[in-house]
Length: 152
Image (cartoon, rainbow, N blue to C red; front, side):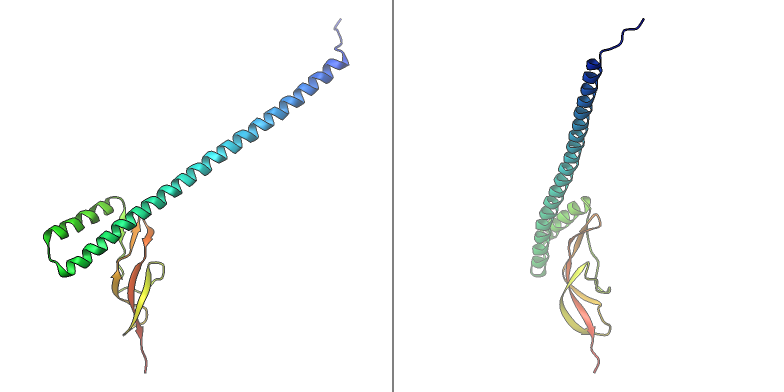
């Protein structure tokens, strides 16, 4: 004949099972929190890295602007070689110039610095400062001169 377990033992077993479930639930919540923390940390790291790269490339673009200004006054093969080397390095990491001259003005790619009389409205007449994208993402908008049709 089977021995019947005392009521006290089954109540104690039930209490242990409830406590086990409580700890399991707390563990799973902590694990989920940790995984979320890892994801957020990775996102923050990627954002910081991206901003740092953008800032660094922006400084190189300023140097290229200065070299292009100097080229107006000084025709030097060494200067041209340095500019081309910098542009080549930037192209290798995905930086490309936005070609805008003669195209319709788009405020997503350019800032209108000046408006001049022209045959059509909103056509980019001149690029005053080149704009660039990094792997399709805006690095720096161009500064342009835009046409405005004047009717008398």
